[in-house]
Length: 67
Figure 1 (cartoon, rainbow, N blue to C red):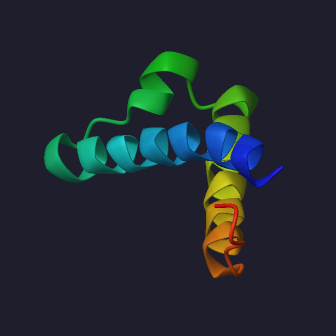
Figure 2 (figure 1 turned 180 degrees about the horizontal axis):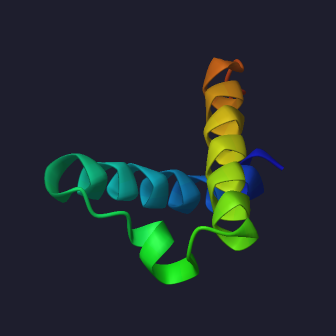
């Protein structure tokens, strides 16, 4: 389960980080360009936030000897 969670969450967090980098460097919000400012953009932001929380959780769990 942890591997599946990381497989899904890592790309979302990377997308969020790249978007924030674009906002900081060029004041360019790629999510708004692609999805507008409506509900779909809010869902993307929500998924990125949940993915970040999931990764925080996964990094705070003890690693098994199999990993």
